[in-house]
Length: 135
Image (tube, rainbow, N blue to C red; front, top):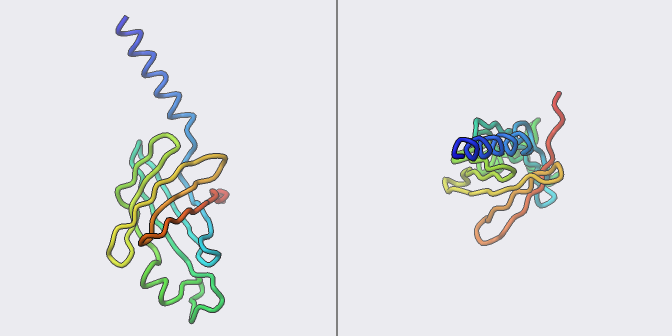
């Protein structure tokens, strides 16, 4: 009886993992109508790694380079390595840094979108991203 129960639990776990949406790849979105966000994510089991990039698209920003990074964005936000990343089914969480302080993101994949939430200072922020097509 224990072997049957264990086999059933194992099979259910494998099916759940296989049916969960794939997090791997590039996700893109827009925040505050001004900043493009690009996430490059990779999973290994439940571990999530990758790069979080923020690009200033405001035409009033001074001296953007060819990639759209302004001196402020490149210095303050720019590209950050994702740390403490975890995947649990369709839920993800990870941390980046801003001005040397950790910023924690939590998200869920639903309907082909990745919806992230975080708090910047005391302001809650919601970011919706779509997975970029594989080239």
